[in-house]
Length: 243
Image (cartoon, rainbow, N blue to C red; front, side, top):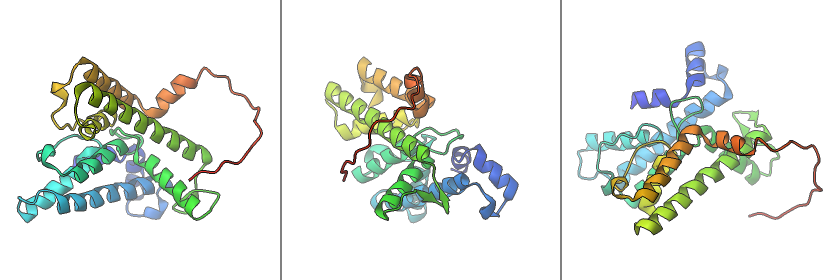
């Protein structure tokens, strides 16, 4: 678990740790976000897993299994328990953890914890009717919010569409297929045992999702639209109601 966390928080975060030690106020805002998000994404799912799963294990082993299954979905892909016996709630939480991934500049895949943090900060700004999104007393650039929204939409769309196609072709439950596609897109490697039984089309979809997850969302977006000429013309603005 320690090696998984070490590899998942990113090189810039480790630079802050090595440079500033325990002087957290001197850390970059990004490092603070990564460390805080990592702590929350370990403790909260571990507590949930402890409440809903592994009831047949002794208390100590149950706590260790819960903690391990909270750490591993965001980058490593190891499992110490039978994943098919975990509750539907725990499997759904695991899907979210696999899609979230680790930190930018780390060995982890996924859409990254900073993306999730930016989206939460933007939602908080909307709830409080603030114009700017904030994290740790710093204002976020609008481009970061826009990129985070694009990455989230891309990951959710590809994961759900891939799962829907596999479910239809193979006649399997959508939830189990979502587990496989989220694992592929997050380059995690966890599975409910479905992948060896899938046909050529379904395995090809997983291969494409793994390639997408390893290359990264923004890389593919920029590659797809880089040929479009930039323009400084702006259309007239008009308000639209959302929510």
